[in-house]
Image (cartoon, rainbow, N blue to C red; front, side, top):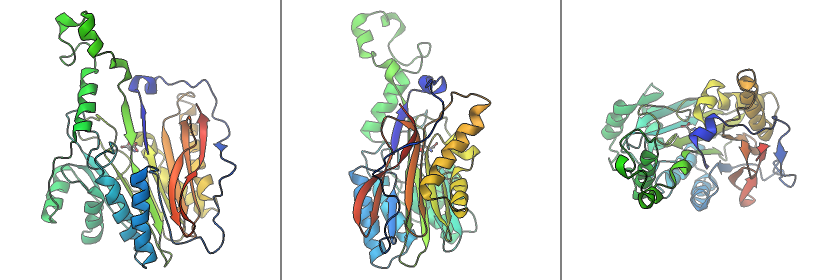
Length: 355
Ligand code: ASP
């Protein structure tokens, strides 16, 4: 999913609404009927690339392949999409114009996990994370170390900045403030013609966006991936929730899996994905677990700032093939791409704060 907010608007956000009941689509059947439960693969991406990713993952699952293989294949398709500014190649860069990627993978069957953070120059960070998971005793490699590791395993180094991402970054640079050296020259700031070139200054946005891919294979094993370019224009070195096991992703073979997108700082503090899986373990459906995690965030901020409702979207699946998703706020109900024996469809979840 990809969403954006103006930073100023975000920090001072006031919806003038209390966090009430979730608005959900009553037509949504979150409980697949018997016989259609597994295998299952979902992603938080609902665009054409997300659909292609699901079909590729599905092919692996129906051929008897593992959930780990399916989620990696599917996530790779989203990672290499140059049009997608939230994940992998084409992702929006950090403050310095460098694309730094975060990704994690978890295999429920082996209870093993791997992750990379601030990884530069590699289009498919989730595949590097998989090697960290399978070929080392570590879970998380960052920055230069992660790149060296990737290089050692033969990953090709490439420029990850597309023209589209570069233009967005430049636009952000120009709109940073009126006291730095970006944007119009001081002596021309009052010139209407020049000013018109910068008329979009207030509209420049910070973007959140990530993809989660979760699957159950024919043997009932569960796996998941979360992969992202993270918060756009972030301070170099900033790591979000996506590569943090328990925050941006968690998998438990007995229960299911969950993944997060949105403002990673909130997701990390409440260990959202772990929390969702634990809620499912206690009997909550994936849909309810997603909503529980959003409520947890609201609850935690209540005493500090009751009007603070950060942008998050959670997805979850159960080991027996149920699925759900929920978002904190938005004009529309959040969607997720689902592929199971019923075919491909975009399921709509619930939203806590309809805007
Ligand atoms: N969670 C990601 C991060 O904070 C960004 C996102 O999902 O939108 O880096």
